[in-house]
Image 1: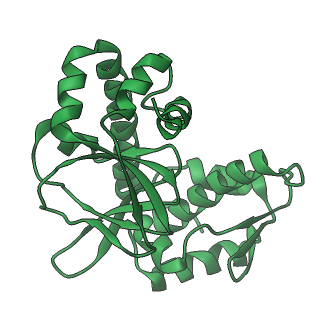
Image 2 (image 1 turned 180 degrees about the horizontal axis):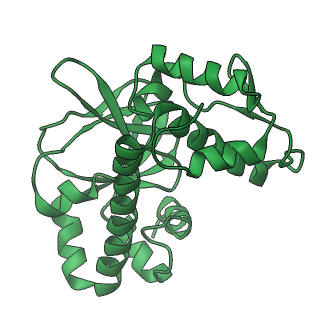
Amino acid sequence: MNELNCDLADWLQTTLIFHGLSRAQRLCLCQIIRLQTWQKDELIFNQGSPSTGFFVVKTGRVKVFKVSPIGKEQILNIFEQGDNFAEVAALDGQPFPAFAVALDRVELIFFPRQVFLALFRQDPDIAIRMLVSLSQHSRHLVSVIEDLSFRDVPQRLAAYLFNLCDVSSQKSSDLTKSIGLVTLDLTKTQLAAALGTIPATLSRAFYRLSSEGIIAVNGSQIEVLDYDRLQDLSQSLGQSNL
């Protein structure tokens, strides 16, 4: 067993999909994987292209999205270190249902479909972990549908900023509930696509939250002025009163 496989086996323990497997099981997985590197903005796969396997993000971020016939982009998810994606197509053998692009320089661990399925059939623990992962992705897509159906753009923006506050608070002890400074992790064009809108509408939503005294905007830096109102707006359904 080479040192690279041993290191990868240890790293796979940190991922959702393979957490809880024994080291022997993870070492077995390392026998079938392929390491891939993709540069920023490089297309990983096209919607409709044959599914050859699924991926786990080792470093960087991957955007998975759909494009409408008129060219409007809807981001379905952004996958970061430790996340897995494209496992549905790998399981059913159907073409990839969306596009995937590297948002940064990305290192991926690729699991070829046929050899993974053979291992999947032999080991029920791996099958159970895959079901857990599929459940997580299904829940995320349900939340996307709920946002697009029942929340207006200011509410979706508030939910995004509220979640960003939670992430930032885990990384910094300086963030308080009353006043916090967070940095957008997407460009405003990307954020508009993630929220199911266009940049002009997103700009109006930022303006409305700013004019209501909930946030202050300085480029990609967002200062949260009223955490409680941001939370209330992020959790509300239906047309906002902003």
